[in-house]
Each structure stands twice: as structure tokens, then as C-alpha cells.
Image (tube, rainbow, N blue to C red):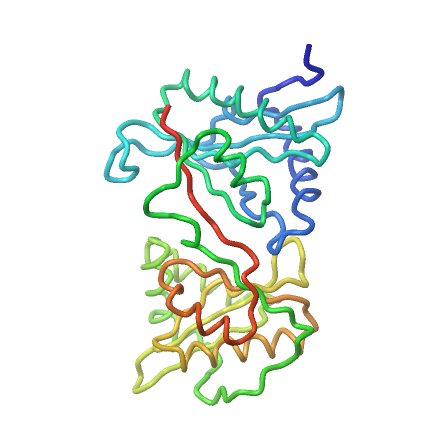
Length: 298
């Protein structure tokens, strides 16, 4: 008989979930990757959030959210579930299988037709587990569709011109700068403007620059810390018309990070940024994490 007990969501478990996240993500390039406040989202379903205990100790958990129906969104008929691969403490690796078995029972009874999950090389167990559980790679999001590039700031500043940069000005730049995030993140323009305005007001903002040529916006970036490790900085948005402008934005952000004594800079490469892979690799960035999306029909 198993010593493990599976329990459904209780509000009091959230703090223990965060403790597990803190433990398993301490060596990740981006700590707490993927942890969202799913418990307050409109698609939260407590029955599909499962926790595993050994005695009184929580040793793992799994979260999910239900996805809209329709082949136009999912390319598979019927309702889907987005699952975060079970997060399990070291020494309790078998718990991932136990959580997955119970999770499958729950979502099947709710009528789900498929499960989608993201896996990456940062979570070293995630890709092997997805394959073990007979998930198949999504044809549009194979390994490499998303990459974390990092720059160890101990490498020092980069001496390269950044003469085209201007400090972001809320009145002058807000409307133009919101267009990129709105397009690439499929977010209403008003939401993009709100996010940029809030970014502009941050006390911990490291970099916030634009490049304009003939009054046209040809480059924009902002950078600030990881919410759980302030020594790690990310460009939460960066975009440029060509390599020349992109390099200036990256160089200035690196040098700003060093001036403010941070440890690591991360750039999240996905979609529109992938054409700049050769540029960042030439600038001595490391490929810290590569992503893939998997699906499983039920």
C-alpha cells in the first residue's frame, strides 16, 4: 500500500506550493518559472489542483487550467486542459507518476479531450516525463520555439556604441511602444499601455529605452528584476528593427545591470525575437533553457 495521499485543493495549501516552487527552482535560470496565481483566475478549477502528502509533509503538487473549446484555438476538437508538469521535491520522484495518474482521472471525468503542457531543459525532468507519459510534441511549438539566453554579468561591460538610444519618455513614446507588446502578446492596446506605464513607474526599473529614426520607433526595451531574485534581471520586452539597433539596446541594458551590481541578465527569445539568435550568441550569451510544447489526446 502506498504511503502517499492525494488531496484536492485547499486554500491553506498555497503556501506549501510556493515552498516547493522555491526549493525546486533555486538553480533555475529564472526562479519560480511558470508559477502563476492560478487560484484567483477565472478558469480556476480546484478539483484539478492536486497535492501529494507523505504523512503531514507535502512532497509534490500539480496545477492546471481549462482551455476554451474549438479547433481554431487548439486544433483538436473539444475542451482541453493546460497542465503544469507536477512539481515534486527531490527524493520523491515517484510522486510525479502518482500525481499524473490521479490528474488524468480527474480531467477525464470533466470531459477533457486533450492535455497540453510546456517542458524545458531548465526543469531537467520535464521533457523526459512528458515523453514517458506519451505526450507528443506540438507541431507548431517544437524544441527551440522559445529560448532563454543569459549573460553572466561577471563577464563585464561591453564597449560598443549606443548613440542612438534615448531614455523612454511617457508622453512621447507610450502610444508607439504599446503597439509591439499588444501585437506579440495578443493583448488589447489599452492593456499594453497600462503595463508600460506601470513599468515606467517602477522603483526597481533597470533600463527603459527607445530608438527613433525620423520620428519612427525602431527600437524599444525595458528591464527589471525577477520578482523572487532581485539579482536576476530580464528584458520583459525588447524589440528592434535590425541587428544594429538590437545590439545597442542589449549593450546598454548589460552595462546598466553591471552599474547597479546585478548578477545575471536574461532575454526570453520567442517568436519575433528568434531572428536575433546569432546576434546574442555572438555577444557571449549562453543558451540557458530551451522550450517545447507537448500534447496528449485523451
